[in-house]
Length: 134
Image (cartoon, rainbow, N blue to C red; front, side, top):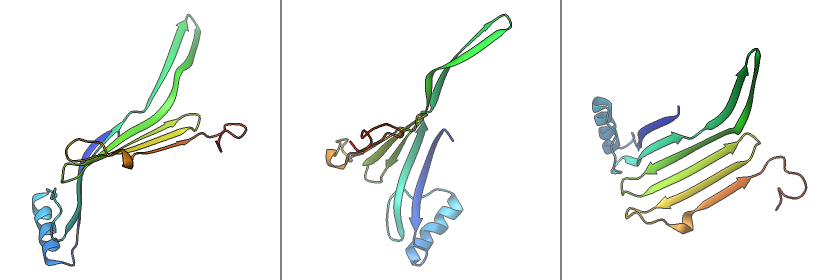
């Protein structure tokens, strides 16, 4: 899947309220968007796939050729919106050479980023010398 939007929630079926919320979902097909008695983890998720590759092809008579101008990369952004309006977003970028970059951020219900929750990771596969440790 390259792009999707979905809702998620967890139901505590051992409780009366959780069972009632699940039965309502089963009959209507709509998940609750707020946590409550017997319901937790309610959220909206959206994923956007940003994978790409650019190739230049040339044909001259019987001769054909192609070259990758921009190497293939697989990347995606996943944004989770919580019932209070806050959001968690993550970017994952994977290059064809094995390098990976991951970035996570949190934005509160008022649209302000919480910089203390930012996370970055970079993995450089196959780099010679002590660069990987650095």
